[in-house]
Amino acid sequence: MNRIDDNIEVLEPGKRFSSYWGELWQYRELFYFLSWRDFLVRYKQTVLGVAWSVIRPILTMIVFTVVFGKLAKFPSEGVPYAIMVYCALLPWQFFATTFSEAGNSLLANARMLTKIYFPRLIIPASSLLVNLIDFFISFVILLGLMAYYQFMPSWKIVFIPVFLFMAMITSLGAGVLIVTLNVKYRDFRYVVPFVVQLGLYVSPVGFSSNIIPGKWQFLYSLNPMVGVIDGFRWSILGEGYTMNWAAFSLSAALTVLFFFISVTYFKRMEKSFADII
Image (cartoon, rainbow, N blue to C red; front, side, top):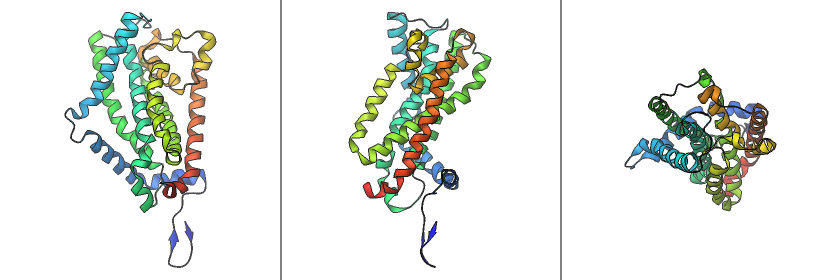
């Protein structure tokens, strides 16, 4: 905050990275409000409402189970193929929805950007909370699926919050980068659905990443969602699922690095958002 004279004050984003996070905390009530607004808008005037968060992963699971499990006969790590696929769909659905909504969030809230000051990161970040609700609803369906197949999860399921947090920073990092580019170059809005569609097939959602030859594992792990999905499967499927920890470490490190690069770039560009929009 810089004082121009005795009567006028100009609000500016925090100059240091640490003060920027403190500023975000000060505006936490706005974050909650935007999240609740997005939740209401998503399911307003829908026939099935919140049931969409259940129908989408179930239908995708059925298709992948038939195509990869029944027709292609990919290995299922000794567990029902439907459970293996659904374990991956949980983080993938969270990533895809958060990335898509965050990527278009600033343009959808252009009027707010030009009227008042607040940390702009709140807008793309608000999609996290909404999609967390969908995640937990879908997780309940996973428990029902396990009961149907009489599958007992491993004690490692207690590590789910760790990998969920990894999914959150992966989603937000990708969303923040694409929304920053989208403000300046509007054709980046076409990149979002392409990345989501392509990523569904290059990520180990319908199959296990263990089928990737060992010499390609590190290259494959450059996709940050590989580490997230493998982490979910390792924590839920138990001893039957083998984790390549070296490849996972690479994926996790790149996820954290990418997140901080994206947020730093966003912070540097956010002063110009109101002028560009």
